[in-house]
Length: 491
Image (cartoon, rainbow, N blue to C red; front, side):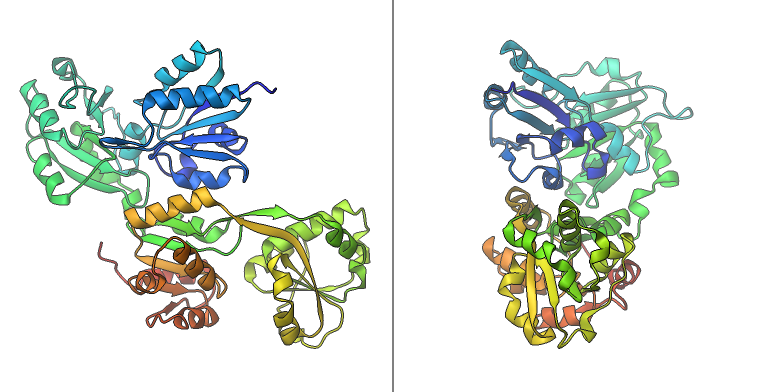
């Protein structure tokens, strides 16, 4: 039996791009992923489709798995010969209990590796426009827990020793904020000392509340700010007004759902995130290549086709992968290529191949339609539109169940204010996914700003009973951005 190993991985503060290269590498190779509430669930889409997922999220006063059970679980899975990733928010060594878990693994002779992550006490302030050190404001920095395993949950801190520290980051201290402020002032901090609280730092739903030691409790209560949050205390907080950057992005504060149809990573969600939005891609699918006898035989006679229609970017990838495996000369492929979307057209163009839209395809002979397994079921509709067709399923889509369950949890917890439909096909797929998660689609859609990439997509949305639909002037990210920024969403 293969010897198992546990990787204690820091997922970073929230933004999925802030995980380390090593952390992502471990995640992609894991047999088992044991993940926390504060580890961005979007990471789960990078896992292997056959990976086992175990959620052990911790909420205040409610633990899905107690720490002792988590320790035992890591040992058990490693002893089964599995590669186990324990995915933790932030850095596992900063209030992440990595010491307890590593100690248990060492006691049982289980090999492990600690993979550091960017800790929230540095990242959240940076995204709020506050460096934790500065030559003019503070040259010392401390990290302190905002709660502890005491009867009342209040942190046990040597307050006097903190009086000489310029900047202090308290983790998860919203509930104990009055206690923290009182003791800091009692031990020498001026009541006018700047304080800032940052919840959900580095994400589009980041919320920042600023005040002083004597006012911050009132400000936080008025804003109804909750954990997870970082409290930063020190004169350096005053620099925020000069250098904040993240919260000035044009889509900051917007929560947007991008309706998906395929498994290939799209650039739409990434572009929206780059502009400050908090983006949920749903539903998400993994793609699995098909290399059965039908694929092999069709590739063998692919030179007979005069016209090949690719229904998705993935269909391009898997068709030519199968072609390369056949060792056939590419010059035998003499067909004209057709695509249904700009993304598929772009995929062919990256390979140096030209494509056309299928408007001129009707009544042609020897048309091959390439796509996922659904093309077989759609043969009649293809023939009604383009004449006699052969179809080739080169891949199949499988729903990323764990990822999608977590996205629904985010939809219910944080909500969204806008939904982007990239194509007409994305409309029924999203509706079906919502219904399967017991979300009534029409009320859900009707309460959001609905943005469509084209009139055909808008017609598909209207057909399900939604009246107000926004259509991007052109199917481009720039025009989508302009459309989204036409309306101010009040959160």
